[in-house]
Length: 368
Image 1 (spheres, rainbow, N blue to C red):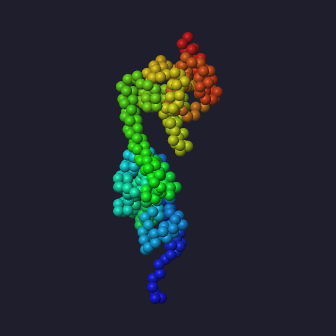
Image 2: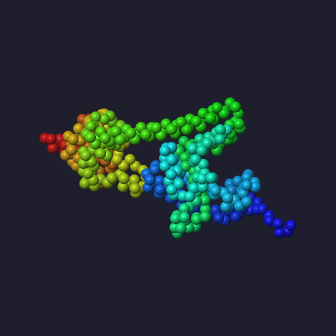
Image 3: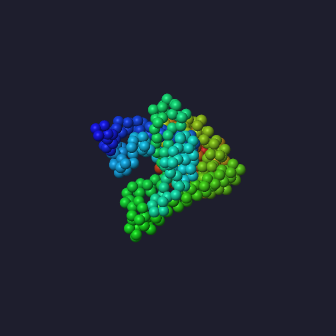
């Protein structure tokens, strides 16, 4: 019949999708911005947040592969806009899942969580997939109004799940029955090992947090008989009054906190300077926090003298310095080891060592 409806070909659908794809690109980008803002506000560390809009050839291929499934693929495909959130720990995945439930309208019928069963004949370490749309409240906002009728797919996974997914794309065997018998056991073991590794990283995180809390309690109570490690040094720098006084002396002289440099450079920095102080403790042969505290106690009144001497060696330019670096400078100046010995085990500018020598001369003058 002349008036009979003719179904569009995949190519024709692709041409129509190409016209609206820029809107999906913009939607995905806005979702990424929102996700990063929410994660930062909630204190959730993340490995990366990626976004994308489905490419036109991929869109066309999907229609062709699933012939007859879509009557209107532009309305029925749920993954034209997409975002992937990669996290460090499994417990963070649960936190982010809850945030997604709160920020979006979730189409649970088309979403998949890791708690759902993976078919027993399939390989893999599954991550969570959500199909979402905007809530009425967000869709009413001017900056979101253009996306009010759109859906997107959000994937939430750990770094190890992400590693499996990357490898999975290269494997020809999606189901156990597709793999040669001699490879099946190895493939099952690989996916199981990644899941076990995720559980172990989660356990290490809990143990690390418990150790940090214990060291913080020791420092606050004045019990400093602690072995030097990153956790004990971080607690000392953050909570000890003597470390704080050294830091205040540096600020009075014009040294700026490293956090300001990190903010300007948009880079993550060791703001407390834990690594710098750990190295100084190693070089000066201090093995406990109590030894460090005794040195700072003995030289509590010398902080500005020492730091000023180093500042003058650089021509009165202070720059940035973490609390750990300032405390380390006091430690180097007070150490019985010679500046030459210290210089052989560190990599500071020549002016720094000249400043240490000048600081030691001034300390000797004050003693005499």
